[in-house]
Image (tube, rainbow, N blue to C red; front, side, top):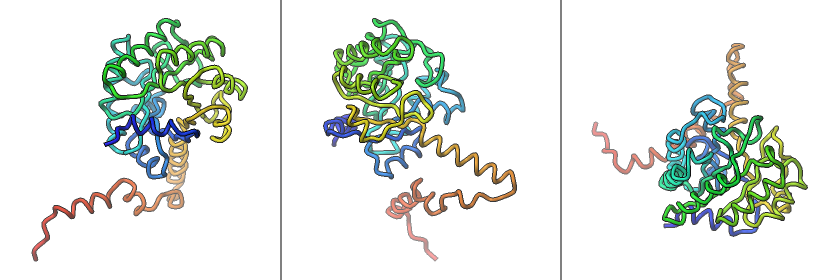
Length: 290
């Protein structure tokens, strides 16, 4: 049977830029898969918001993220990339994090160079660790992969906002040299910077399309022209769901039923899996005797 990391490797071997909506629980992951997207990403921002109702400022723990990773991977057959934040500690903690995500079924894990507690890449107050610590994090992640944890390493730097583009490129180059499978320079401010990153850093690149964020929202075709292979949309699905929930609640508050905003009950049951459950149940249920 093909492993999830191998599925992701096969996708990344193709010369295209994948649109990757990001998930935050089993249901959102399942809907992304049912919409025929070939991969997804477990967004730390979205998981923190959905699971805890709290901002992505380092408040959610490794254990909570790992539990969410298990639920998401169990819900879908497409490859999932997991947000591993800063790795939750020193090099040995990072290796444990890599192992945990691999055993949960993740195809890849993202490790970043922010100073803990980390925060969303498009919010204020970010700081990054010194170069050597950043390199040690990626080295530990790569070592864990090479020592038997079958998972791809997505290496992220947030140095662009804190220390400038040149430092971010230098770090990403080193991450590539250390053996990272996918490179992610967070928050470039224009197309020129995005093109420079892809030109100067060897490897497979991911772009982060945050509505209202620092980086321009570009089409997958344009991102591919610039050199990107993955276009992540970390908040699009959650934002759409939250916006519709708010309007539905406003309707109910005004005494109006939000029927036109709702998915049909048949569709809801089908997406969640009731029909599949009934089909499977029928294989074992004893016929009723009158």
